[in-house]
Length: 514
Image (cartoon, rainbow, N blue to C red; front, side, top):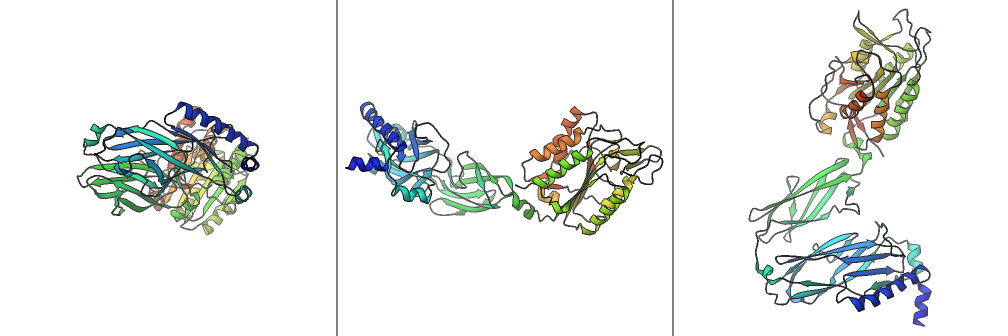
């Protein structure tokens, strides 16, 4: 009856896995004197294989690697980020209990891990035997729905073999040797996931671990700041994070003056907080695209509107440009451009950011040394409706934004600059760059015509779409695409400050959103 009851609980796939376990048990007892591999099968459908790799002895310390491989009902490897292997300290038995000084369970009673864990054991120097046998009793901890849990009742756990064993040969000469070892750092939090990534959703993280050394720990620093210390070697501190990758340095100094430093990278996956951290205001975009001209003497263009629309879509989809603050003018007349710039002059505040984009014809007058954009109502015969670069500069200087970035995909657009030389300085911290006002421009070419099919805009959109950093400066954006544009088009793109508009050395920051 007992066998029939088990068969009722384990149907289908469960019978198959138990059959495999029984066969493996028979093979295990007939071949191995110690069992360094174990299969676990749960009636809740969780299976794993546990393996003890080759152990090492270093002086009085044994290092026993425990590895987990998650498998399906056919014993094939699968990826499982939710299930964990659970090992309780009291269920690790040894044949020399009185000679085990220290069993490293991270100062806890239970260790939970997903892929691998290195168990450290300290052996007493007066150990007189030749080897020590360790026995391990594991359990599976996994994400199981309440419905599944209720339908299965109490989860049954089948182990093959019932206990996982490891016999370690002890070199007694190593036990009495001494070495002035630097302190050891064991990190508990933030924990790495299955891909060895440390990802948090907040703008700060608790760094928790243990620093140990025979001479005692004098000091633990985290990013050069004192961590809170406890008598058992535990250290705790809180580190503020910026969205994206953050490097954290952990330094332990023992009483002999020896130093150990570890560096970890923590990914702050909180793009939504990027805007808040910079205390940034609204992001406005004015996208101007001219393809069709009323004057037949001015040739129409083919791609301006499509290219401009693609840029606007990228800004709204991937960055902090809201639809209500982003406007596109299609084939605008001179008056339309003036009206929209007047509106922005009224609504944009000193905490806001403004991006202005123009795609269309541009003209440079060599005689008067003046550059122009051509709206759709421009005439070849006179400059009455030509939009002067000097007029644009006046608007950019008058709009009270924190940062204004002008992007122009037009002929002769390079005349807008105060300076067109490349920046050689290393990028400053994002907070510092954002704090200083800026009036920057990037253009598809200098004082020469640019082709109708814009390589410049193609790479601009590509780089913006592919960027995954939470913060992207306009300078970094420009230099990420400059070489590609030069290699694939006859023009040389330009980047620099806009003349006489109030630039103070800051930069426009694109803030990414999920």
